[in-house]
Structures are given as structure tokens and as C-alpha cells.
Length: 115
Image 1 (cartoon, rainbow, N blue to C red):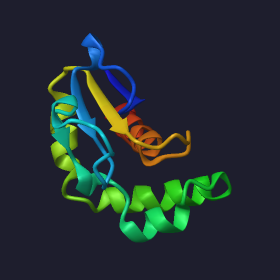
Image 2: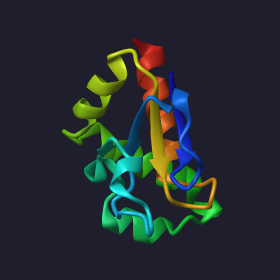
Image 3: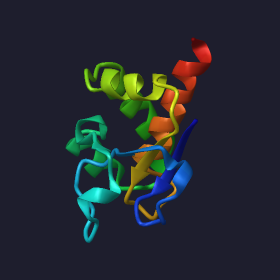
Image 4: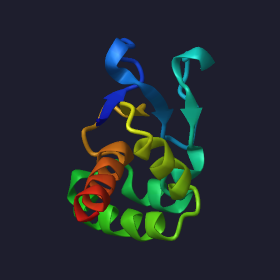
């Protein structure tokens, strides 16, 4: 099962592999709250800065981020972790519901639905 949650939310038993998908390490978070940090799966600095969690740019952000993901060699690492069949939780820092983890989960759901 693939899910997303804010890194500041409590760790739960069913989180499984906890993967931080933000480019920057979150303030005040200990390393033991994360199993894997895939900072290179996050949007490019240029895209992240342009988007700035603006809901009006959400659809365009997803389109551009999906293009980046489709060319990102680090995607294979994430896909392998998910294919192991364990629970996987994508962790993010943002308070906004318009964030890269939400978009990444949508992208991954499409991949697994197609296969």
C-alpha cells in the first residue's frame, strides 16, 4: 500500500518504509523518523520555486513535475521499494495540500494502474 503523510505526523506501525520525498531536510526532524531520503525525486529547484504551493499553478506544476519524473533515474529506486509489496509512506514537509508528495503519489498510482 502506498500512502502519503506529513513528516510531523506521528509514526504509525503501518507506515512501512518511510520515504522523505522533499529536497530539503525538514527542521527539527531526527534521522530515525525516515528510512530513506530520496531528495533527488523532488521537483527541481526551479520548478519548486516557480510553483511555490500556488493552487492556481497546481495543474501546470503536476504536468511539469511528471515530465521531470519520467526522465528521473531515481524513480527506479522508488519503484523497486514499492514493488517489494510492503507498505510505503511518502513523507513531505509542506502544510499545503498542493505539494510534491501528492503529485508524486498520483504519478505512481497511474504507473501501477497501467501495469
